[in-house]
Length: 443
Image 1 (cartoon, rainbow, N blue to C red):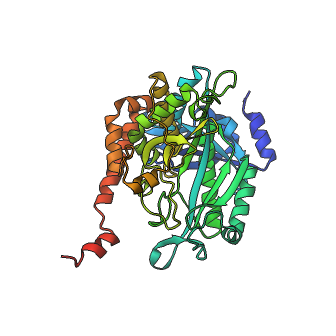
Image 2 (cartoon, rainbow, N blue to C red):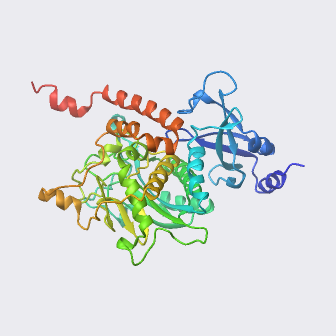
Image 3 (cartoon, rainbow, N blue to C red):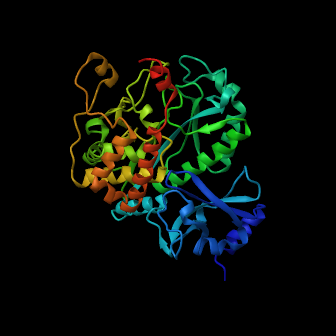
């Protein structure tokens, strides 16, 4: 008897005939193929096959038993896609040679999560997606899609929301159909920048949900003549986009282990230790949480056209302090380092690994920061240690942090470092408009 036949029958009753078997590559970009719904048993037990070397970061050879990448469908993830009639979406785990693939970031996150599951704990993650709506203008140059979105301080701009109401409404409707529990939609602090918040989930489900969010946003933005952009800093003089993680852990009884109303910053000793682990490994975490050349344009203490910047440049933590790398709020921890160009599975895995090491070693964080760090910088006062200033520096830190690489996944980190070194080298071979304007006739 086919144990998946009831699922097939249920989906067929909804008009579904195919499954989009979705995984993501090392860069966190969704990939996949369409396969027949009738063969669901095969897709769950064996997986949909892909040429392994054709996928960024698998490390698989071009021949032999382990040259094929198999994406095994997670049955409970199946859901109809409103924007692809007749197609159901399915999250996949990566396998090769009949074994879990260590360079699959979803498998890697599952492996790290085992460390807290063995303690009877659950990691909860609330993800805050920020993004830009862009288009190409004359000469193929990227620009904000809404030409009228030009306020000096555009946060919460009602007029821009009204002008882009068709996109926003279709996002709201589609995400709701996909099971997202929406909390708010707003215009952010840069022209063309928006944020859509939805309810937190357990870590693995939160990562899966963010991939589905991005797929949905790409499709709907294109339908409305725009590009959904996860580029961290597309506008030089405006704030960039973050992908903040709100983190909490509950024990086997459902009690929040970070929370202590009587403790400093509302955190328990374990909460402070987790934060200490994040700060201790922050340089190496930068590579995985802010993984592009452009990420470090966001992570800079630069001025903003709006007069405000939230860039978490310094390794500090404080109560409801958005100028710190770690912000404590309502007995949970907000990790402000990640940006939307990250592989969300890898970023969550690395964040959890670092926090757990802080707890296991009873690390002590620095004194909490109770002031605006940008005001301290303006006064010329001594500052906390800052994050790496470039992808190259962050990769050096990840290579040097053997303990973190071991905790996250040695195979994945090796592939990641190799590809990102090549990305940095390619960047350094380019000659920018800024260089030409500054140097072409200067000497």
